[in-house]
Structures are given as C-alpha cells and as structure tokens.
Image (cartoon, rainbow, N blue to C red; front, side, top):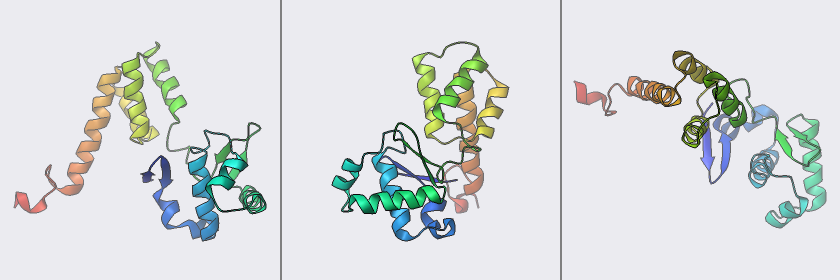
Length: 173
C-alpha cells in the first residue's frame, strides 16, 4: 500500500487511482476525501457546520452522501460523531500509533522515554508494516537498534531496486 500525503490528507494510492473498483462514483470518492481531510482522518468529530462552510454542498446533500457511504459500509459513525473510514483502513498490515507504542513498551518491559517515543512515532509515519516491525523487534529490544534495523532494511530495498546506491544502473557498467 502506497500512501500519498497531501497537506495532512493521507490517501491510499490504490483508492485514488481505482475508486471505481470500490463501487464509488467520482463525487462519492471526492466527498470521502473531503470529509477525511476535514475530520483529520476521523480524529476530529464530524461537524455539519464546518463541512457546509468549507464545501458548497447543502446539509441535505451532505447527509444523503454520508447515509449512502454508511449503507455501503465504507464509513462508520461513532457515538462521539467521529467517522471511522473503513475503506481506508487496512489494519491487518499496519499498526496504529497507539498499538505500536503499547507493543514497544511491552517488548522493552518499561515506559518509553520521549526520545524513544519520537523514534517509534517515526516508524508509524514511515508506514513500516507489522511484519517489518515484528521482525526487527525479535532481533533486539533496544529501540535505537531496532530503528537502525528498520532504516537499513528500507535502504537496502531501495538499493536493490535501483541497482546501485546512487540510483544509476549505468554507473556500474
């Protein structure tokens, strides 16, 4: 899964390029992206007032579109008026930040320092998969060392894809 970060909006590239395969119209896909952006991917409560101010849609249009997306199973509305974007969540591949912090505290057997929290947060931001993180944590319980393992693995993958560390295949000929 490739994510595209556009001014605070994290979008799955597959969704962006193939929204029709999700049985969505262009208008529905754009609406999903808009409400995802305005609610900070569901972290902020949905506000009809904010959405009508930011978009040129009426309340009826917004509620109709929301109802349609809820019925299709792409959005779930919580009791706190927060939206859970089921369509964007591929939870089986990635840890949430909360899960990742709990996991690292459990593995290390102690509360993380602020520096370690920053390092673990960077893993989340770099979209390391559960498998990559689990493999690195089995090799070491030291957060800095695990960070080095994860960064090295990514750098090696980039080098093997390009053929050289400079990215020039012809350079080695």
